[in-house]
Length: 245
Length: 126
Image 1 (spheres, rainbow over the protein chains, first blue to last red):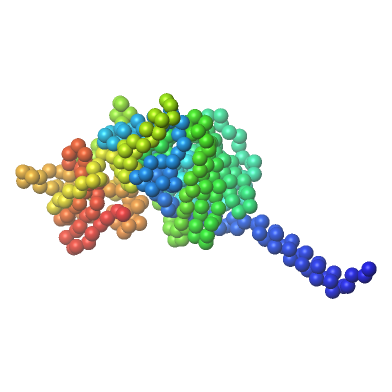
Image 2 (cartoon, helix red, strand yellow):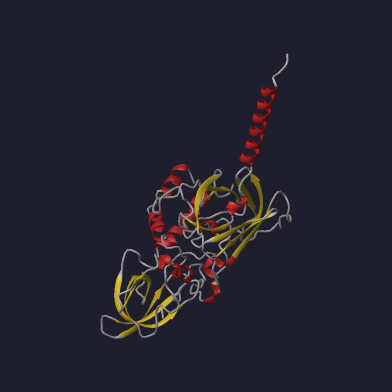
């Protein structure tokens, strides 16, 4: 049977269009991640509840008790100190809930995220490149990243258990790992789905979603916490206050 | 700890109080009573434009008519700047009316709610 040249041409054209559509759909606009962003949800970690509602985090019994102790201390007006009290950094994942803006810089081998709060920087090597884990905890942990379609996936391990997730002293253990799934969900919107895996603190993996708005024309300012910090830490671990003249 | 006890912990009302106070994010925030406000006519003594907090030191007259110093905690100047405040917004000697959330322990300090200058301008951080 002889296939008409017109049919062959048409089929070839359709095949070409389909192929190029597939390749365009698979290519994420990485440049759209670049820029300065500011958080929409405020500083409390559990974005799935309103401020004032109890958290939905599936804490283990030990961590329910630990969290309750912190909440009780704060309710008495004697909050426990956390590392930021002494101008140590918030760490990962708390920095994701910062009220200060951050800047994302995507290159072919690395994503850099510059945070205004305490001038923190995360360097996230992509696709298996970059140094091996340190084998010891740090505030920002050890991150690696990869592209998954339109999403940047960042896995972080080895975070310092001294840090907490928000101002209520939301706790984590030394075995916490964090997976961020970051995508540009609109022309001026960044969305990060953040999953916590913590076998000591949580009975199962637990995810919250945070969104960020693009701030064109914004600039990252300096933040030197040690300049005028008024919150010493008392011997009993509560936060002191030297604000009274 | 059994499951029922865990549920009881989670239902504790103190969780609600802590969340309410965390609207302003800071380690020292629970030292202030956010359910109360106080208003003072004051004179600016000193204005500090520093991280992690800006400060306004004021001279106020207490209930007995004596002049005392009162410290007003502000947020980070990074956030103040974005709200239009500047390092020059207040000068020593300025007459202001200030509304604060007071310290729970009654000491002469508070968290800013608003500062109104003699020219009528009202300065807030949120």
